[in-house]
Image (cartoon, rainbow, N blue to C red; front, side):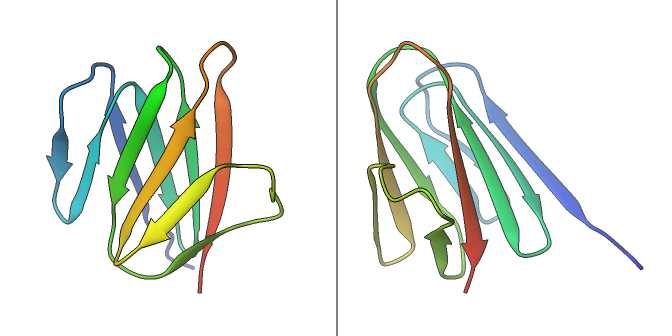
Length: 90
């Protein structure tokens, strides 16, 4: 089996782009493995925006405030503890 993992991390509020993935809004770490994506958000309260190709849905976490439209995901992070969001590719 051949597994490909992608890691994208930003420690500041500036926007960052890595290939076809764009992130902005504050500290965020993304790990993409096959058809699953794990997002860890930390730092100050605020909206995190992620643009990534494909259609992704939140996996088993209905309380996570994720809005997705036209390939752009917006996650309203309330601050304090790190937030883990797991997505699966449709």
